[in-house]
Amino acid sequence: MATYMTPHAFTMNEQQHAAFQTQMAAVQKDELLGVLLAVFLGTFGAHHFYLRRKGLGIFYCCLSVTGFSTIAGFIEAFFMPERVRRFNAEQAIAIASKLGVFEGADPASASELATQVACPSCGTVTAGDVKFCARCGAALAP
Image (cartoon, rainbow, N blue to C red; front, top):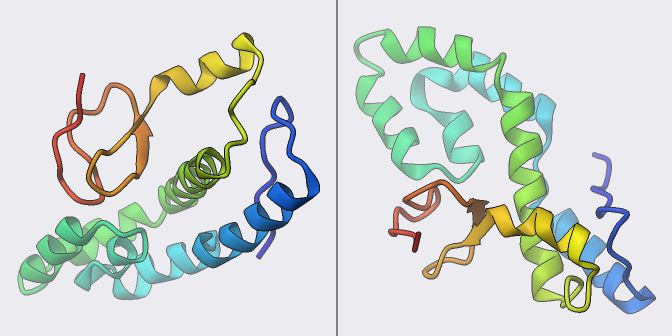
């Protein structure tokens, strides 16, 4: 599994970089594993549990008796690489913000983060236009 590189607009010292790489390696997900989970265990929502989407995973488990979740899991296998990349990017932003990488960043690169909102309950970073956290379901401030 390749390590996620931080945006080139932000600079880190060696200590921040080492901490970032260590923490990112612990939370980073693999695209191929996500696709395989969607194809072979998509009936039970394993691919949603893999990306910490417990609500959808439970929903798929409940629908597993109907066969709908089998078809949906196979179709979602085509979308899993992008979802995994987005998940990894959100994790990278959250880790970098905890390490203080974005403090003192130039305004042009900091505006990229203006569209990101951190959940007050769990700290997950999501898009600014989302009203509820995908991880814990808490309401996000507008």
